[in-house]
Length: 568
Image 1 (cartoon, rainbow, N blue to C red):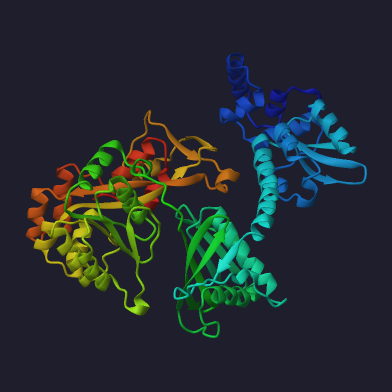
Image 2: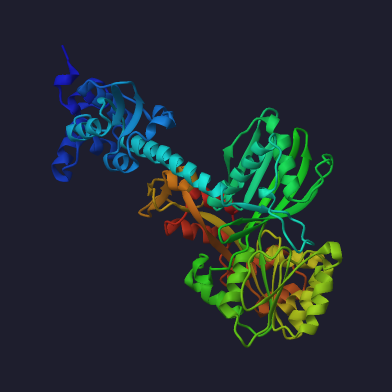
């Protein structure tokens, strides 16, 4: 009779049909060279999974098996019985306890030294269950990470200040410290928790989305929305009322869209929050955009430029006059690139002025003007006044109408260097967009020096980066072939919220307005003709720039496909 507790691991795997004898022999032969444990070697060779190994290990040692799904369900109140440092060092996790015993998940139940240490630490008898190495790592990071976050939140709640959003007020009032009705206190705390989580996770937007039975709270991290909580639909009224009070909006109006703002201070950080309320069939949806008003600390070398593109861009932003236009959708990093450019070229000898709505970064050494349409401070009126301020370099937050475009063009044609942004899909279509706004082709061709389209792709988390074999479909979709090229992805960890990504990098499409391109613009050629000529002169498309990032191992197939369209 086959008794697994008296058999070798390889024999049990063959007996239980997890692999055949030929595969076992192959692994044993390789083990002579690698000196690895057989189980880990078989997993690395792709012959078995970690779950298979846990099942067989449990049979061999006579201990129960436990898998990742159950490891994630542990009661948070008992986790701290074992200190965090000990749990990480020995990779163990408490699953339960009684008056005299404690149930501990371990990869190696025969590690008697660790078992003895736990018994001395807790004064309880240890019952061991078997778990996989990576499942334990994920669970330990998840549970102890939540404990750390709770401690951080408690500390943050005592320091967060949320201010009224009336731009006309000279003296802001800290509404979080005002007397609050007892029935409203939970919603004050909930809104503060949402904002703290968003700020801590480097989020750019917070979405409060009412559904039929719950409210989805999602935050945008590195350009992608992630759900952080789902309070019941009964909480919607309290959440929206609290946010409206902070944003100086009408709490009685629930039928029409509203826009407002507030400010948040956490320690020495100040974040400007733009609030948009939109009525939906299930209630009011709220989107809050977070803008960190702290000093700008990025430069061109950290945005993701390849060295050739960086040299090209650096050459054009140092020209004495003309226009630099950066295009892309909302959240594609246009403002960040503009400010990195100003940081690169500012000096005591130049007068730099910006006109923005809103001012996204505050930078010393330049004059920044915030639009206030309620009092008539618009792009048009401000730009006409700035002409009398003797500017050398002008940044216009966005060209969105014919009046702003006309003034920007005139600045560029009269000896000023102008930076601005336009919402367009790529570099050639940006020229079409300017003409569509109302700028004559001959003025576009005469004034614009460089058009640059850009996108942000998420970068692979360095903590969980691993080599990856793409599918045939992925290779075909990007026009690539299988070969010696290595590709990577992130398997997911606590540091990246199990997404496999942390941080973003830019990809760029630069259209230099050389003589042959200017001639096409003068002739009002369509964007496809301009694109073909630009590619002939060396323009790299957004898709090609994304593939370059993929090959250098900083992003994934998924991100390139998500952020760019196929070149036709």
